[in-house]
Image (cartoon, rainbow, N blue to C red):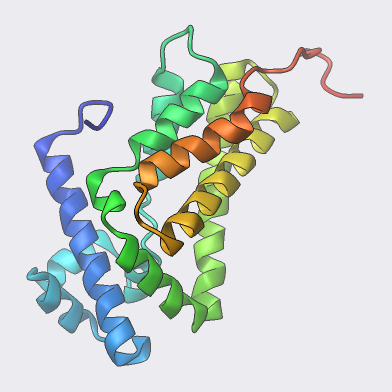
Length: 209
């Protein structure tokens, strides 16, 4: 079950967004990305062109598939976790809450998207830029939760290591889907988490000198 009580409307929006992403990636793999139109994507997903533009400003965005609500939603979960939960656990739980059934069943889509993006380095760069923005948002949330100054290394390292763990899990899943993505991500986060599970002792006020 999704955390923060995701509403029926939110689930419907998530499904529509996922359907548009699937249509974009499938058509791009089949016809070549430059030959696909927004009209064709909307028809494939069985929605109107207007609906497409409610979710994405362009087909580039639909191909990259970065949901602008993901970062804020994850940061909110980190900050809303109970007081006794460590910053690492709050981050870990926030990541795992994002792995819905749709994502667990999207292996073929992930492989196709990777294939199309490899042919478009410009879009690959944009995909990485989106990730960097989300990472900064999550590092800020981890820092606030840990009571650390914004410049501290710990939150940035935790989130960067978490992103690397997630990518490793997805790469492993792409090779063999006999294990669910959620289980692989949990294992990957726990592997590095044994070293980052607690905020190190810190001289808070003065910053590093």
